[in-house]
Length: 614
Image 1 (cartoon, rainbow, N blue to C red):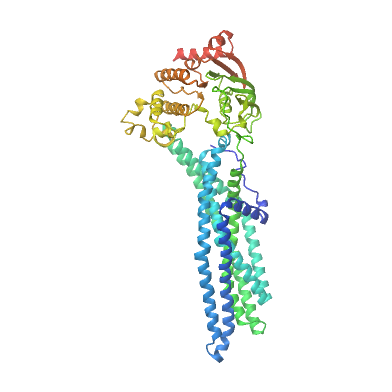
Image 2 (image 1 turned 30 degrees about the vertical axis):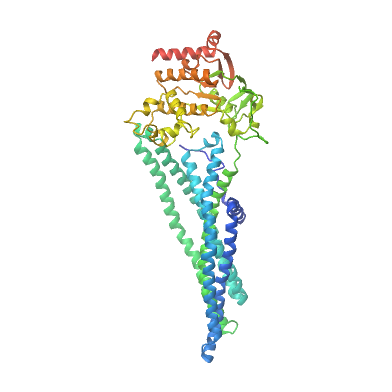
């Protein structure tokens, strides 16, 4: 499905991508590499030292060429041998510094960065709200992160192995040539300026094509992941061919764009390379005339010949790396933006962990209103509600009335736009967020199951749960018969359930959620949230769960907040809160609300009619 572009997707305009953008991007790249700076800075100084030795070798070669005519008169001289030895020594020292100092330092830094960045992004994603993650599908998000980290590492490698050495080599040798013979230097400078100008014009011309290609690439990964994640629906409706065709169309467009752009670039590359080649040849011709006129030495021309061809190759590399970095620095900006994204749910400072004076916890919503980002109308308006300890509160209303938003706010999955939520009179935003969230055990309507064993899914909230807890949770959720089914689960609770619980039915996944919540309650949670938790259970399993809930309330003084439409779930609640269009319209017990003959009575009547039809 199509998604709108947000700030994460936005690429800079072509007008923005100049030298200033490049250096800002390099600054962002450097900030992302902050923990590895000691390695990278030492590697940088070692690089300059290695390049210095590399630049000395051609200078010794120039002096050797100028010495060659003397050999006709004096024969082999000590100076000539010394120059050869110095040239070899400079080469060996440069290689030694590069291989034993520069490269080990840089490799350590870059490998550490490559493994640290995904961890930091993952940690950030885990801290961001569900609203943030709902902005785009998982496939596109994963593609961007993977591509972003890959490109950041590529940028660091390009900059260190190609851009910096090439720039040092070109600038220093261009200065030396100009110092030896300014006319030769001028010709080389003019050639380089023309080369760079043509490259910039080429980049502007093809930028839109490259960005379209990158957008299609992200789209194709998103479609690929989405079709695999929804493979049950695809196969159920016999849409395999459609999904393959949809993905293939994107890939075909990518292929056509890439081929057209790659072939179209060749004429620009021809022009750029021709400018450098002609400039180099012109400098050689002028150099030979300068030797003939006595204005220069043979060594200078030989130096130009030896260094000039390497400068041309280095310049080609610099321009290619610079262009690629302009395109890819946006990946660094995106990763940095994610890492700097503030979490919607934070603790006020200084945050503290509440140690309640009383065993019982009173949860209250005070004038709570909430509006989701990007929405104009609030989903909740001025909600007042007090949830007494050990009670069962049922939230009832039409779909979209705001019931799930209430429980999300209560459990601090989100924070209200206005108003406050208090625990024993203390604003929950002043409490440690993770400590507070552990007070809640949640059974959602759609239980998420991890790709691991049934046991690991059940004990997700408390991996070290003792066997006694596990046995109770399995029985309470009616999973004991499932675990004993050796045909489907040959390893019992240790059997893997597949990606997203593919080996489980909808009702079985919901039972896993109930067992998981029970483990959380035994490990210290004080509130149980049931968000349509029994909607996928059969009548027999639901009766067992209802009996369990009653026993749980009696023995553990658990406070229950339930969203349910089944009368069997909400009939015995201590208080039923009817929410309509984001506001509380009715409160009371089941019998009291029926007597009012309001919205609750109408919803109940509609449900009973539905049950009769069934």
